[in-house]
Length: 181
Image (cartoon, rainbow, N blue to C red; front, side, top):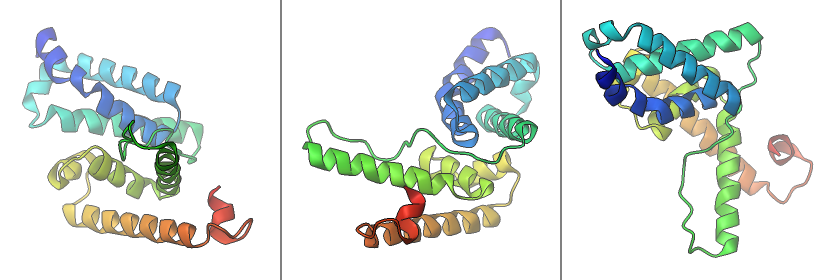
C-alpha cells in the first residue's frame, strides 16, 4: 500500500481508534499517544496491509493489543471512559431535559466503566462503534457466540444497575446510589 492508499484507508479510522483506546485506557493523552503508536506500527507494515481482508479490523486489533499491553505495563486495571458516545443532545431542548440527558449519559458511562474488560470492549465495539459480530470476532479473537453472550450479559447488567439506580435515587449514601456517585 502506498502513502495515498494509507491516507485513504487507514487515517480515516483515527476517530474510531481513538474512542476505542480511550474506552480502554481512560485517559485522553494516553489514548492519543496509543493511536500515534498504532499508526506508526501500521505504517511500518503498509506493504502487507493489502493482504488483509479488513484493514479496519486489523487496525482495531492492533489498537486493542497495544492498549492492553499499556495496561499490563502499568499494572492498572482501572479503566474509565471519559467520553460517552450515546445519545445526541438537541440544542433546542430545554435546560432541564438537557441536564437530565447528560446525567443519564454519565451514569451509563460509569456503569460501562465498571464492566469486566472483555464486556467493556464488546459494548464499545458493538453499541458505540457499530461493528458487526463477524468483525468483532476477528478483532477480539473470540467466537461470535461468546461475543453475543457477553454482550447480552453486559447490557443486562447495565440495564439492571441503571434501573436500580433510578429506583434508589432518593436514598442518600445508601446502597447503589452511594456507590456509583
